[in-house]
Image 1 (tube, rainbow, N blue to C red):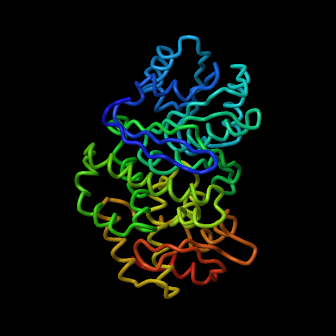
Image 2: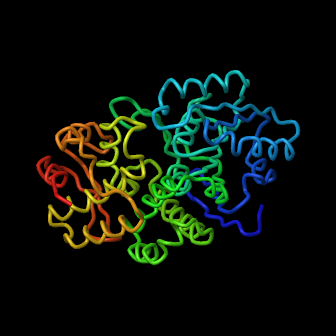
Image 3: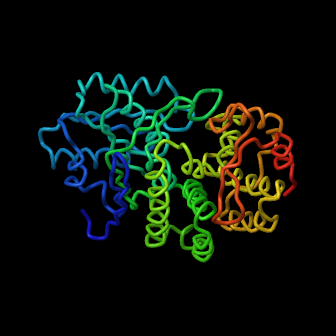
Amino acid sequence: MTATARIVDVAGAAPYRIHIGAGLLDDGALLADTLRGRHALLVSDSHVAPLYADRVEAALRAARPGLHLARHVVPAGEAEKTLATFGGVIDALAALGATRDACVFALGGGVVGDMAGFAAACWMRGIDCVQLPTTLLAMVDSSVGGKTAVDLPQGKNLVGAFHPPRAVVADTAALRTLPARELRAGLAEVIKYGAIVDAPFLDWLAERAGALLAGDAAALAEAIARSCEHKAAITARDPLERGERALLNFGHTFGHAIEAEQGYGDGLNHGEAVAVGMLLAARLSATLGLASWSDAEALRTLLLRFDLPVDVPARLTPEALLARMRLDKKAQASGLRFILWNGPGAAQIVADVAEGAALAALRTET
């Protein structure tokens, strides 16, 4: 392992380690150390595989010469996170003859990580999965915590399972090839951690916005580690989202509704939708008297500093988004449930929110 790698340990019933550093995709010893058997499937997508798959395979084969290793590449994009594409991963495991001690390596962003993780959760009722996130959003969010899923036309992540990874290996050098828009999308999820549990982190981010947007390696490594530490602590205490873990969904009820209504692959990407969703959640909090409007405005200012969107796409109506939110996994029979805040660093779960209040937040003028 590289000397500069940072480590975040995730406790709980199925503990694992997050490795953060440059050059880790070439560290065959680190990758091979996660293997318990002789079968491995490397799952990636059409954008990431040409960049990194050969290197990961070479590192694994050098460290474990007898490994039965196969590669399965899926089309890139959120629109491909479907049951049909998931079925292709299952077929690849079958073709490999993967046994109960096999491992799936998920090389890519959140779509690959969610889908490959779900396939690992389902194959023979659960085999190992090692997350190799190549986007900032995946490094700080989807690769950590064991949530795996695919989308349906009716909504995001409606079919899935909790399946903690065996390890997460976040090679920060991969961020050098990340498009600027995707980097900003990941920073939206980084901002989320400050919003829900760490108000001083928001100040740290504001001070280093320029460095982070420019891809400064040290600033990004610190932001990733701090985000992972927060998520690791929360998911260790609440692995199945029966309480506190729901706080990680700040902005996601609105954001997922935006993604579903606009059509996956069109319009705002996940991080951008979450940015808009966080501001809407802050405005809903102000509408309900939980926080001040100045808190919402401060969040808007920070999001704009990171060149993130703050407005719902014009073609999406409040009524259509409300209909999507009724199907959200966080909704309950008694009404809508949101993650709101009492101000920066103080998120809370609020159940039975009146639909009229949600509509008011959606209709608030920027």
